[in-house]
Length: 145
Image (cartoon, rainbow, N blue to C red; front, side, top):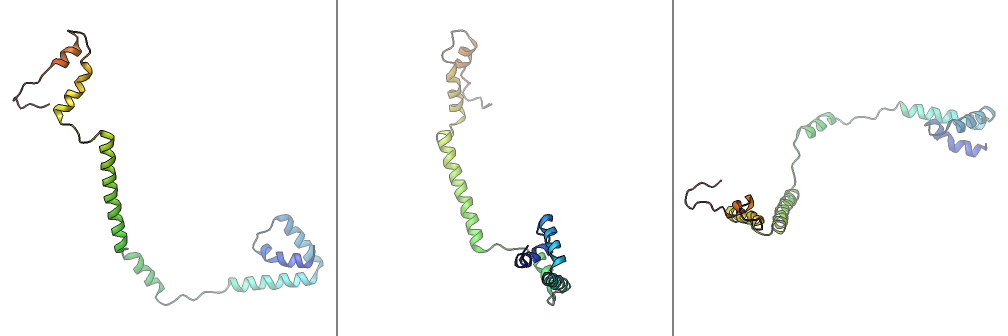
């Protein structure tokens, strides 16, 4: 391997980003090349120094985080308006779709009963279908079942 190629791959090798075969080739090169070995030692020393750095924590950070976690998040005005608009649109669209699917307003109970009995009109005289189709509920008895 050439020194320039080795030196461009040392950082990736330090971070375990290279294959074992490439790592073996780098190891072989480092045993025979003092310049690349020196570069490797400098890179590992820099990595160790950076690993020992401690980032200063700003004063009051823990309290700020705890306060944000405890405080309930409020919706802004436009979010509430958008939610209300979606709700109204959904209800209107649902009503329109229901009307088109069910053919307009729902029939009253008696109309639905008569419409459902129309399928019995073609039954022979004396059959159960003819009896059911000819059934007329009594007027004014107040029992609607």
